[in-house]
Image (cartoon, rainbow, N blue to C red):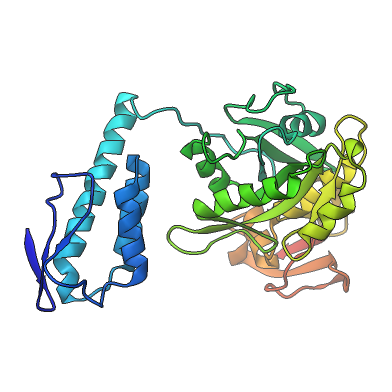
Length: 355
């Protein structure tokens, strides 16, 4: 196929002719193809798997200049994307698509335990939940996800132990589960002299898969990049007590940090509370008029939710019949009428009045 872009002839390979996208330029490359597109095209040509090719093609489509001169090139990229998606769907239906895993969500939030080999993630899961992972002295023992429910006061948070993050051995489904989690607990082995380098490497590998760990709220940044609220957990602190302060210094400006030992139990309650905070949920209790609040089982809702969001979660039909809401908590409310756009805080109590 030969296409003319801005007076320059471009020869593109037919979609079915090769796994490479390597236009043969008759002259110098047009200036309207930006560096992001060129980098994505080069990444496509270096790709070794269909998943990597699909990811690169999607970036090419997102970064290619959109004008009449590139319409046929856009169509070519779209055909390739459609072909790879069809191929992946065929593998999935036939059961030949390789191993993949899904974890059903449970509890108030889902937190992925992430880290380099032998960081102690499985021991942490066993210490904080009723799960029984395989715990060994050698790395790479975890090869599939294992969830467990961590109790924190009156709610439960789901922790998911995952295979370690390595450049050579981590499969794509691991990153997929991390993307779907509400938050990330980055676990590191404080007894390792290279714990900082190991933590940085794990973060770099996540970034390469377009997963950023941050202290801010978890969110979808764009069509491919996600940010996940993170917590650094230093394990085996009983073997290197002085490194607890080093961990906190390293984490300053990145995200919160906590250190613990699953052998002695030191710091585990601090870790439990830190996981609750990074999960990004608040608890709201309800109260019927003239009666004490029901503190037996809270409603859980995402941080940043408003009084109206709480009303909707309690019952979808309440909003249409709502007169007002009284609120206890949030520092300044003691049974007063609360604005519907007021952001609720952890352990607030609401009393809903309907028509």
